[in-house]
Image (cartoon, rainbow, N blue to C red; front, side, top):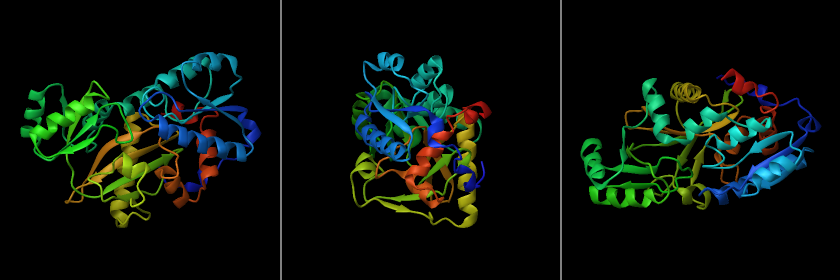
Length: 322
C-alpha cells in the first residue's frame, strides 16, 4: 500500500453503478450505530445521483434480496451478521458485487482471537492475551499477563462489552459481563500509551488519527456520544514513526486479506513500539466516525469517500488481488 491519494477518486459515473442496495441496521449489538451509518451513506449516494435505496436487514432480508433488483450492495452493517463473512457469502451466492472485504477476510477480522493468531505467526506486534472460559482462567490470566488487563468479547465491535480491570476479582466480573455478548471472551495485556486509528481505502493507507479521551479507554460512549473526545490529524508522530505505523498497518491488513476499505486500531507503548488490536472491515460512517475524518485529510469529502468505496465493488478487483 502506498499514499497516492489521487488514485482514490473514481471516474465511474453514478449511473454506471446501477441499482445499489445500502444494507444497514441488522440484529447485532451495533444496530443503532449501523442505522446512523447507513442513513448517512444512503443520503450521500442519492445526493450524488446514484440509484440507491436502503434495506434494514431483518428476518425478511432473503425474500427482499430475491425480490429486489440489486446490481451491487453497499454493506454498512456493523458486527455479526454483516461484518463476519456471512453477508458476504450470501451476496456472492446471489452474484451481487459488494463493498469491502471478502468472506475469509471478513470472518478473520471479526474474530479477534484468529486475527491475533494470524498476526503473531507473521511477526506483527499484538498484545499478549488469553482466552477466558472459567473463573480459574481469570485467576491464571491475571498472574501470567499481569495487571491491569482489558477484557473483550471476541466477536463484537464498538468497544461493546469491553472493560479495563485492575484485579483478579474485577477480571472475573468483567468476564461474566462480556460473556453475555459472546461465548468467547479474550483478556489482553493493557498497553499504556497513545492510541491511533488508521484507515485504508482502495489500496491506500490514509493519514493516521491520534485519539484522546478522558475515559479509561476509547469506549462506546467516547466513540459515539461524548463531545470531549479529541482527534488529531496530523497525529503528532514524527515522519519516521508515522511511516512505520502506516507500513505496519498495510502489512497487518494484507495479512488478513483486507480489501476495499477498513480501519485498524493501534496502541503505542512508552518505548514507542506499536501494538495492533483489531481491524474493522465495515467501519462506522456516523458524524463521530474516524474513516471520514481520515478521508478529509487525504482530500476526499464524505460523498467522494462513499463513491470511492462503492467503486471498488464494481469488478471486485481488490478482493481478486487479495
